[in-house]
Image (cartoon, rainbow, N blue to C red; front, side, top):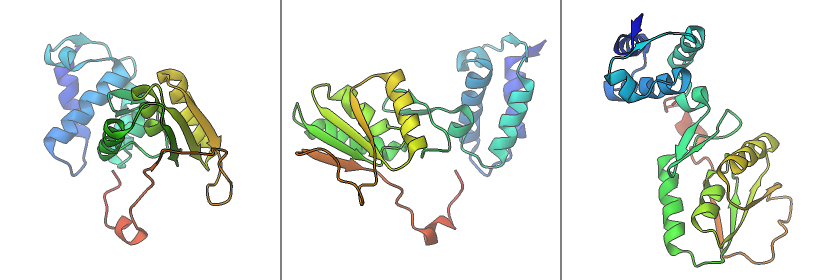
Length: 199
């Protein structure tokens, strides 16, 4: 029977990304937890394991080596201490966005009316609704697939968010008064994009 540490190092050696060892190991811990249910403690304890999902694990390693973000592979991204479902219909929440949300939470009075433009996964709107439960949060996106993801996260994580599909440049949002408008759209120019890593 296979030992968990042996599997960990086997998977680590198969990942051929130009990343630091620490980053690759963090990725492998996350992958083994989500695919096989192996916690970091299980791996460190060098438990005996079976490998019932070998094909799924092999496919995930291939996708990682194709520079697909681990969050899309495991369909999960952490944001503000919560696990959000993600896929290629939405952008992966970034750590910097947590700073934006934290700033809003610290500086927003109760019962504020908040609009999140381009909500994507819904991470900003849902987090603000949960952290500021007396607020009134509306989230808008032009993409129906993105709103499907946001609503799925809303159903899983809770909160009270009104979701609207609209193009804010073409459609009037049916809100008369707002205290805060927040948005964190993609901000990399096409010229910069060519020089960036895929993940």
